[in-house]
Length: 195
Image (cartoon, rainbow, N blue to C red; front, side, top):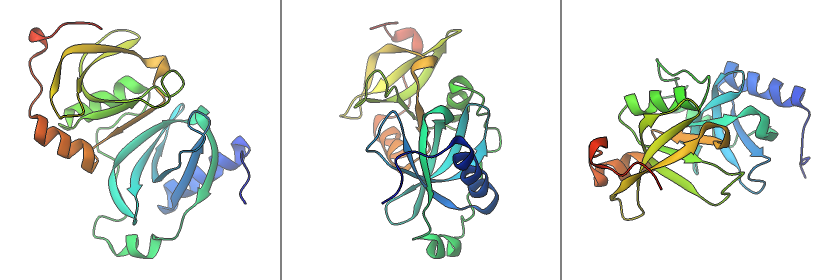
């Protein structure tokens, strides 16, 4: 059985190995103890890492940015590596203009790529993920127009403080399909600014 936590040095070493060798990882975090995130590191920033997300069966599935401070256990996950290496899209590439300096730059990049973002505030709302489009920015927060579970755009914006955001995913199959069903986001001028 694997350890429940690792030293920051060991975590950093595995992240760097993944980035250098396109090594798939299994990652556990302190904010969602029972959740496992699968992916290959594309970039390591000061506070965030960017993964090429992997879903069951070893398929590439968009991107996930995680706060480094939340990482507790990182392990190599080589089960599907032989299959991944035969895929024409392997090794995965970082989006060319992505800046992982902070939640705002990550979401701005995702929005420019015409995809929805899935934003997690796990420390405050552990079982909630908001999916939508960033519509406006404050100095310390983003106003997100969300898509409801029926793939309909809400008619209000939700304010999310950057300090509460623990994970951002975008460009995956689910976000892509949801955007196709919901259609283009309505104009911010028609929305109620707050809830």
